[in-house]
Length: 550
Image (cartoon, one colour):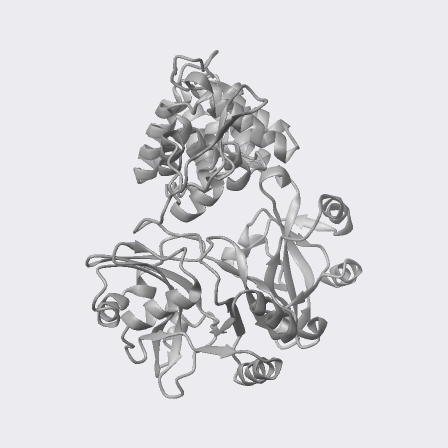
């Protein structure tokens, strides 16, 4: 790209991806992004900055392709006219993009282009078409057109975009710091890359922006917070809570924050509700749309709960409520099939925060004010829409008494919020108390599990067993039953040791090859199973794979 604002080519983008992949320094990665996007006139942001960032962060896109690795193998076996079996065998190395590139280079039917000629916006349009496609024939037609004009390196990155994993080991915070130091926080609030880039170009800030010339080519960086608010129908990254180990710790933080608002921690599903006129949208904790069967009844009751609200964003917990005892039922009972087992229960929304009300963002209001606005404008709908139970506590005895009551009733715990705290998307500035956290974990329910199988990892862990299937022996069925997956907390050195520690048999997620000793659902069949679970028990103990059940 040059001073004349030339269009970004896909080849430019591939070179950017390669540079980020090769770099191990987080700071340097941000600098690489900064140098790339600040290639407008006079070191300003290039006109296609938002597009570049959108494709660098494919995971934040709402586009879904629903194409699994083996489906891609099937499609490209047809497109490239190469043996499917050979491609599947190579796929066992764990990286579908590299497998497809290898056979793309070998194909005598369609050859990779010798040089890159495709614009980045063209690739973005292809991805839109893929997201709208339905059925194998449409996918094959589109993918065939694409690979006819891509180089081998471009083809690899294109496949990674479809899989939403560029393998650059860089998340939104690191990438957006290359845009501007304030860009990530602005994006957390708005979830709108186009708006963030637009505001940066306009230099629209809460107070007058000061600019300084950096050592990297005289680029302009802003010293104030971006003035960006939340948008209806665009999910807001939820504010979170950090573990709190004692009542004393909580009260100390509360004193610094104007006191404490203490709420019951409900063991349900986090739900963010957006109301715009008569239209409702619902988002999960991960910002995904919520299945209709979980929220379809809410449209009837939410207007009754908020009769004066034209526009609204609320933060809440969705769970099943026993209408006889008025007690919430355990996590997982919201499922279509499990819900039928509780005849006297209804799906209920427990609301604990209000982020937006009738054209006004409440993010910068303290929780004490947001709660006042919520209570003043909400009407309880019995068994359907309720306010979260709250308490104001000021002494250790008060908090300990409340904790004892909550745990005795089988509830999950407490959430503690400093009364002066504003809503900070993505930040862990609230606190949570669960019995697992108290007394060095002495109150926790726990289980010693063993490794039963493993899955190939993604990103830099592609080709390695990096996610482990854990379980325990059930003497009634005389089988080992699965309990959970474990894929976090292992550093690279430990992960490499585990490749040799466990004797595994590759079954490539083939249900017909699952051994009789393993009770596992079809959806959880791993890439590998242990050769002998009794030997695995000894190896697992050696690595202290001890899990708390939370």
